[in-house]
Image 1 (tube, rainbow, N blue to C red):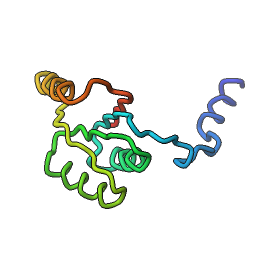
Image 2 (image 1 turned 45 degrees about the horizontal axis):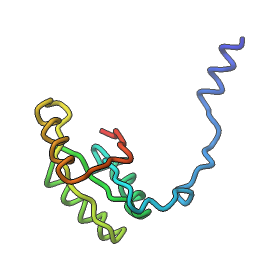
Image 3 (image 1 turned 180 degrees about the vertical axis):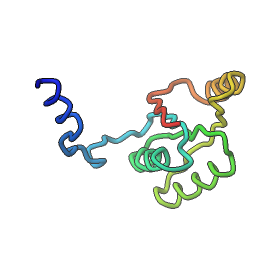
Length: 114
């Protein structure tokens, strides 16, 4: 019976009390969001940019990412940075890491959305 009750509770968790208004100022924080050119990743990047973070959009499609960056700048006033990343190609992953390290000395948050 305990397992069944646990399953019921897990199937219908309580409504979240978290709000994006609770995110502190992220000025000076460097964040990579994978797959942030669309969907949940893009919305996440938008909130992070609105809170002052320096956001890298790591994705395969440069054209879609540049369009997302344009839209995000229009909506937040802050500009994200494109980082070419193909998670299906180990050599491309290494190249992305090297490119990032050539621009930044720290990474504060990595959001694995893709």
